[in-house]
Amino acid sequence: PSATSRDKESKVLSATSRDKESKVLKTNPSAFLMFLTKVGSYKLKKGVFADGGFQEKFFGDTRIDADQAALEIHNSIKMPTKSNPQTAHLEMVGPEPEAMAEFLNAIAESAKEDIVKEIRDLVRLLTNAEITKISLKIDNLRLAAKEKRATEITKISLKIDNLRLAAK
Image 1 (cartoon, rainbow, N blue to C red):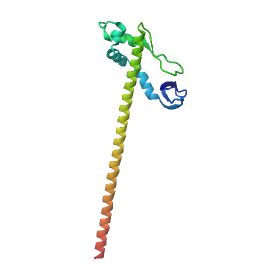
Image 2 (cartoon, helix red, strand yellow):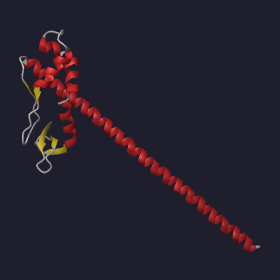
Image 3 (cartoon, rainbow, N blue to C red):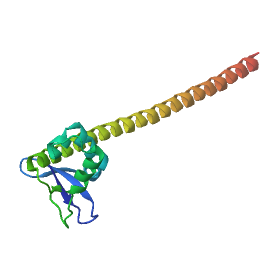
Image 4 (cartoon, rainbow, N blue to C red):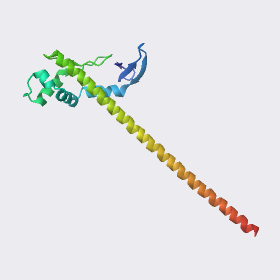
């Protein structure tokens, strides 16, 4: 389960995961901010509106311009901010309460899925970058060790040659 809280020190919105006894497990401010940004975006709402068949659910007539209908729905949704929010709230006013509830749930679910994918992709990108960085370091260490061995072999070979010359 996830709720929001306002960090009194930094004033940063964050997602707080809690266990069954409501003990805080972890806080990730950027993931929650990503979610809020995604939920508030016109692009997400328009996609959910079109893909979920909400034009017919809200307007009952598919002859209405889809872009205009999606914009009206987008503008009818408010995300009020509170000085110390415990949860994120979406408010929507309109004549179709069941369609509105379904639409708001679909927006939240779509935003959650998008953010999970974005975070997964980001973690994959960061992991691959770290692997590349470590691999380059290993290659450089191997090259340095090979050069050091070659230098040591050359020095020892010169000593042996000098000793052979001195022994003659």
